[in-house]
Image (tube, rainbow, N blue to C red; front, side, top):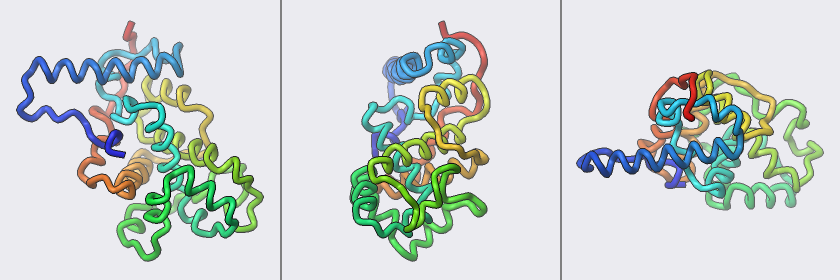
Length: 216
């Protein structure tokens, strides 16, 4: 998932090239939000778009996989209880086999430390996620995507950008958490995807505020 993690590196870059890359990044994010949430996107300023996290500018395929993997990190305690072969196969297909094995690795102290205390391990209204849970394998990928989308929305500060992203990523699972908890889950998803931990800083975006106004 290097596409998610790597932010623009300004070091030693000519100012004109740096400006070009930032404009391209901003344009990609604006286009995605205009496609997915046209009314809400119209309220965004260029400043809000510049402060958006890097994952909003990746390809559609990469963003879909990213949502599923973040959702899998959130649901990991429940996923470890799965014994149904068809459901497990669907899980592996949704997040990739290397990520699946890393996620379920027993006795991983880094994973335990990254999981905030007091979080549920399953979205509301979706059964208990355990071995006896009546979960159709066909719903595994959409369920993980909805969970991951909800977590990613929680990483954003309240404001116009969060509102637009919520609409663009809908439907979301029924869960809420403080931003630090959501960021911890997203950063762990990066680490489990074999991305260098330092690169996880791009999960939080380039600014911590979303400004109201118009980008038109």
